[in-house]
Length: 251
Image (cartoon, rainbow, N blue to C red; front, side, top):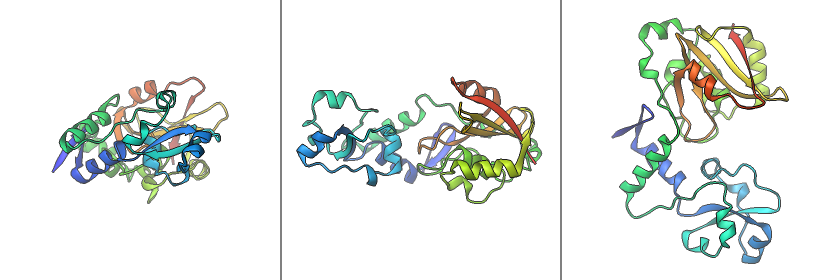
């Protein structure tokens, strides 16, 4: 059985995994290190799955803080100010699996836009033939956290295995230098859109499919699919202070 999420068909097995990542029985909480030691709670940050890091937004935990896995009952032992200071909401599972699944699907779609891969015509896919991996990647969820926008762009250009990798900046920059040159137009296929930060490091990337479409993976999070969107929408949603957009053409 499948459901459609953000315009993408998803099977029950993946939805079950999503539910487990969104509302596990034991959930990570950021607490002062002194409190963790006082209670005898181990700092679990080194063993935390990437999916839980992304669910609970555990990106800026300080050295004087611990990440501890707690069940719902034990959470009541936390001071109220610690519970209020968590980076992201905690959603606890219930005995109603169907209701929890509905909550999970609502979470997946909240604040995100539909993939428009079904609107790309056969002629348009043929015109984008140089992007050998784009069609099979468009309108998919990778299946977990880690794979990111840089790997998605490389995979669309035909690099085997890149779609499943947490692509780091050095290999991505090497690929850019070897496989692209400055230039390209938004309306043509094969233009790599590259946003760099104030230090010049890549912050995000996508690749155009032609006819106003772009292949885009918004983040490395498990909740982020590889989507086909309108180029103008991706550019407008990627305008952040300190980022500049450059264009490079696949060669």
